[in-house]
Length: 217
Image (tube, rainbow, N blue to C red; front, side, top):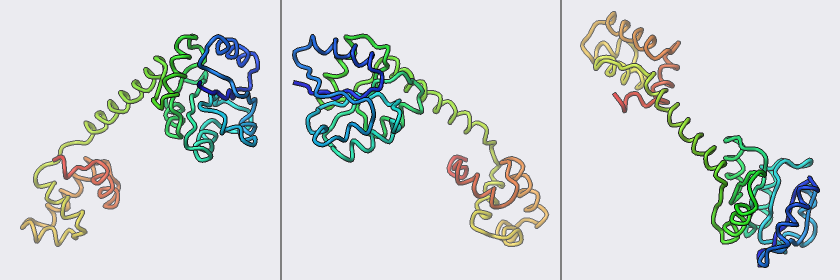
């Protein structure tokens, strides 16, 4: 038997869930909560295997409530049932400890599949949620590639000068180590500042480290 605690402040929606679960022999509703604070009533969490959680509650945010629930009872399984399909919100909720995320417009069959899957300790995301997450990953990868392409190539000599700048050498010291004139060092430094869009030496060092320029040249 899968014991479910429903947490949702929309009573008509909860009534609809009850009518679905009443027809299932392996699902039992242990209680219903209209606010997040009601979840922490004495002994309530110990009765439930799964919390079917609407994260848009009037008193505590979905991210916070997930964290609190996992802290309170590490064995509890959280299946989010929400209208929100924004990638950043979904990601934060999953990081907070939820095992599944299903949109409220999902069908009865998929909802039951999600509950039974999460009950076994596995994760479950509805098709729409999976698509949102994958689109987010693809966009991030695309942006990362674009950012890397925006870093211009530097010459072999500029690389040598940059390495010595990172090592905190002065222009005079760089000139001596590379056997070039001070004026040439200054020209290379100026070129590096322009290419990497840095305002000063500190910016040059930061951009070099963030983009791993010396590793990729």
